[in-house]
Each structure stands twice: as structure tokens, then as C-alpha cells.
Amino acid sequence: MGGGVPAVVLLSGGLDSATVLAIARSQGFECYALSVEYGQRHSAELDAARRVAKAGGARDHRVMHVDLAGIGGSALTDEAIAVPETPTSGIPVTYVPARNTMMLSLALGWAEVLDAHDVFVGVNSVDYSGYPDCRPEFIVAFEKLAAVATKAGVEGRPCHIRAPLINLSKAEIIREGTRLGVDYALTVSCYQADGAGRACGRCDSCRLRRAGFEAAGIADPTPYRAL
Amino acid sequence: MGGGVPAVVLLSGGLDSATVLAIARSQGFECYALSVEYGQRHSAELDAARRVAKAGGARDHRVMHVDLAGIGGSALTDEAIAVPETPTSGIPVTYVPARNTMMLSLALGWAEVLDAHDVFVGVNSVDYSGYPDCRPEFIVAFEKLAAVATKAGVEGRPCHIRAPLINLSKAEIIREGTRLGVDYALTVSCYQADGAGRACGRCDSCRLRRAGFEAAGIADPTPYRAL
Image 1 (cartoon, rainbow over the protein chains, first blue to last red):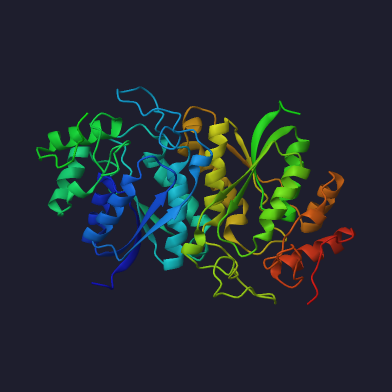
Image 2 (image 1 turned 90 degrees about the vertical axis):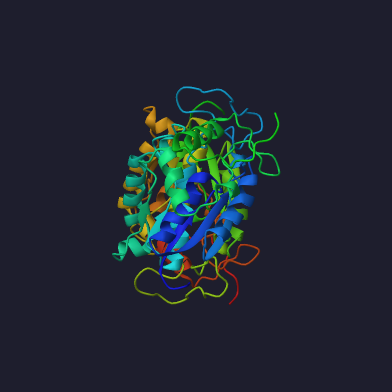
């Protein structure tokens, strides 16, 4: 243990970021996991993030708090907006304004303090919910921003934003994580999980996850609650 | 009051952002002021921000909390790093990693919720401290990021990042603000102001401010504490 090149890994506690942590570790990075509590309803995710960070061999794990609930505008942070349980078209109400921009900026700040030049994020643009800040052009634009935004960038040590899942299907993500030994029973993807982390099985995130296990031909270890 | 095009204005409580609020108001914007409490030592700035928002006619003012102190790395957030009182070369220790990226991302999120397409920020690259995230290339890169990061951007209503001070000297900023009626006695720029908001007169920020009033030929209303 120890040694290795440091990297910050954004860790939500969901399936995708647990896989990203395993990928970063498999590439030899010493991983500093960062979770952001932004007033999301599904705080069971944070408990999951703590379990995943430990099981996944993160060197350190921090939870930062930002009160996005104060500005509202999303079903994930605003109690007054219901989480949809049937597919919708366009960008859904679970979209949190500028969420990934904010989370990557916090990761970028911590990376600079750690003298790390790699930030890993589990965004994915194949089996995803249509969020604009999960697309390749967003990652490219953020990396360009990082090069001019930080002291390290200006001094010629820019930060790379690594999104190893960006072009993988959910089934491919699950197969890769399974190969690397990720225990998906520890993860929570549901937008409205209960206090014990049990999933609803009906929200957009649950539907994508469930279909991914089916397509991968791997047994779904997700604890679903009785509905 | 009311009506007008909504805009988010980042308001630190310092001289520059107070001027930006006055400029945005003079251009007819309905201003939603946003202050970010990121664990900075100089919390007197936040009291100043509240006074400035009120005096400057902001429609609303919110303070968001982010615990950057948890990652350290700056004299402004880490008690273990002293604020320098003599000029230094290069990017100084008061630089807060990725600070403006984080603050703009929060402003961008609130703008999207408000359906605002303008974010004002008081960065300045003339009489400034050498921070990388105060330069024109940073603002340009953030605006490009915003265009692909948000639902509004993707739907053809991108957010403009307005930095009206970017090419002004401190003296020009002070003259413009004075012309618009800004009461600079309400503002706090000092990195180590005391609880009453009185300035040290010696840190980098105090030196720039003091020289600006001198160059503008305008009496400096800053309350300095006995040293």
C-alpha cells in the first residue's frame, strides 16, 4: 500500500463511481475519494460511499457539504418536486443545476492541495439520464478550464479529468467492475432509497441499473424494498 | 422595483464585487446576490456582503456554505498558513485552490434555477494578486464550459459570465463605483479584518485597495485598526 500517484476520485456511493474507484486503483493510483453532500434526498448514498471507499481501498475519504437545496430546482434536492417513476423525454427533473461542474471544481481544488493531477469521475453518456454534464464535451470543456483555473495548471502541471466510463454501456460497466472485484451490494443508485439503502426499483436510476445487470448476465445484488 | 432581467452577482463584501453589483444594477439587471462562505478567515466580509447587498438594491441575497477549509492549502482557509504582510512574487499563499471555479459553478446553478442568463463576477487582472482564476482566459473558459454544462445551455440559452472589471485598474474601479454611488465604507477587503470589519492595512489586499484610492484621488473611507 502507499506510494503510487495520487488521484482524486469522485465517489457518490452509486454503481458507476464504485467502478471508477476500482479502475483507478487497478491503474496504480493512490485514491483520495471525495463525496459531496449537496442536500440530495438520497443520503443513503453517502453511507454507501463510506462503505465503498473502505472496501475499494481508498487512501482517504472526505465528505464535503454544499447546500444546493437552498437554490432548489431539482427533484433530487427539492422535496416539492416528485421523483418520476415512469420514463420521461428530454432532460428530467432529477437534473441538478450545475452539479457536476460544482463537484469537479471541489475535486480540482482538493487535487491541487494534494499535488494530484488526475481527477476521476463516473459520468457516462450511453445508458444515462440525459444530463448535459455527463457528456464528453462537458469533460473536455472542464479539462480546458482546469488548465487555466489553477496554480498547478498555469505552472504547467494541468489536471486531467478522467472519465473511464464515458463510452461504456451500463452492462459493460458492470462487467468491468465485477472483473475488478467491486461488490455492488454495497452501492446505492436509487434516487429515493430508504434509510437502510434499499432501492425503489422504479425510478430512472433503478431502471437503468436493473437493465444493466440483466444485459450483463450478472445477478443483481441490489436490495429492493417491498413496494 | 421588480421587473428587469435577472442576473446572479457574486458578492464577497469587498470593494470589487460591490462595484460590480452597482454596474449590474445600472445596466437594468434585477440582481440576485450570492456570497459563498468557504471557511475563509475573514468572515467580516460576509457581514459586509449583507450590508452591500441591501445598500446596493439586490433583489435577494443568499449565503452558501462550502467547507474548503477541510482541504486546506491556502492562507485564507488554513490557520496554519500566515497571511503575508510584505509583497511576494508569483502566485501567493492566499490563493485558494479552484475558488473561483467553485463559486462560479454555484452561481451558474442558481442562475439556471432563476432562469437567469447572466452571472456577474468581480475578477480583475490589472491591480490583482496574481491568482490564475482572475484572468480573462479563465472567464472565457468558464463561459465555454457553462454552454455545455447546463440544461439551459444545451437548450440554446447559455449563461454569460460578465466580468466588467477585468481590464480596469483599481483606481478606475473606485472611480466608477463612486460615480454609481457605492459606499465603500460598507465594504471589507482585508484578508485579516477584525470582528468589526476593521482592516489591517498591511496585507496584499489592503495595499492594493489603499493604493487604488490614492491613485483615484478619492478619500479612503476604510476603517483601519490601530496596529
